[in-house]
Structures are given as structure tokens and as C-alpha cells.
Image 1: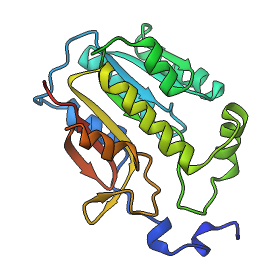
Image 2: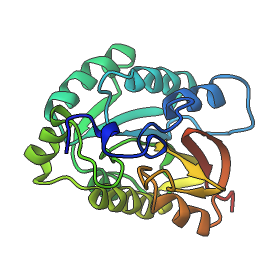
Image 3: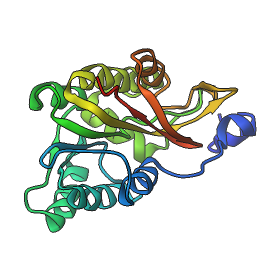
Length: 222
């Protein structure tokens, strides 16, 4: 395999169209007047802290405006330390936790505690390609391994556990999501929610907004 994956895969498989990131879509949906109602004090949870895209700062500022309690979670201690500085500069009550996402959701929250969940953890790549070493090494160091299957299952587990923890009408946003012909995951199954999004839709979650690169779903009101 060459060092440039685009030399080994068709362009449509690797160079997916990317309209925007999930944190940008959430900001657009929630920053302006809208029909979403979140009681003050509910939680806004980011799964996968910022690595340079600015998501943690954008989402923490949005949570502060919405009067929601913001927490960002990541397995990488260095990212957690950096994220803690970012969020506490916005609100000293906000926090950054170093933990597995599925474990944190299961152990920290009660039923209906979460208003907004942003899932952008555990990277995926086109089938057969490998992550860049600077991104892959922290997964090996902190989790012991990396694979697309692990990433898909992690996002599915988070979604299954979060289903009860999310308030009625709460939102789940997935970053790195693509679909083709109306179906999710066809872009070489690179989508992080390849398994999770179809499961949530089977639980009658509503697709609020999809653009190439991300999707927002809403839990049924009742």
C-alpha cells in the first residue's frame, strides 16, 4: 500500500463530499430561534473532544447559551486536558472527562438527563485503508487497537445506552456521516454511524437534518 490512500482506492470511495461538520450543523440548528425545547440544567454531551476543528469550543458556547451543562469526553488524556481548559474558560461548571464513551454515558447519567448528544469519537476510514499514524497511535495506546468494526460498534453501543438517557425530543448528532441512494454508510462504509443511525431510525428517531458529513436525529417526544 502506498502512503497516499487515494492511490489505492477509487476517488469516490476516499474523497467523500464534505459539506460541514456536525458541530457546525448543530450550531446552525440551535443558535437561532427554533422549536427545540430543552429544560435548563439538562446535559449537552460531546463524545470525542476537539482535535483542531474547534468543536469543543463551539459546542460549549452553544450549551452555555442554551443554559445546558456541557461535558466533553475522550479517551486521550492530552485531548481531555486541553478540552478542560477550553470549556472552563466558557463556564467553570463545564467539564472534560477521560473515559470510554459508552461507560461514561451508562454510569454518569440518569434517564432523560441528556438534551443533546454529539457523537464524533473513534475514527473510521474507507474499508482497507488505514488511519494516519498520528491519529491511530492514541487509539492503540489508550484502547489497545483500532478498526472500523470497533468504531461502528462503539457508536452503536453509545446510541443504545443513550436511548434511555436522552430526554424525549432530545437530539443526537453524528459527525462523519454519508449516505448514497438514501442509505447510510455506502461511502465505503466510512460513516461512524454506519450501524448506529439505522438502529436509531428503527427506534422511530426522526431525521431532522442531513448534509454530506453529518446528520442530526431527534428522539420521539413520547
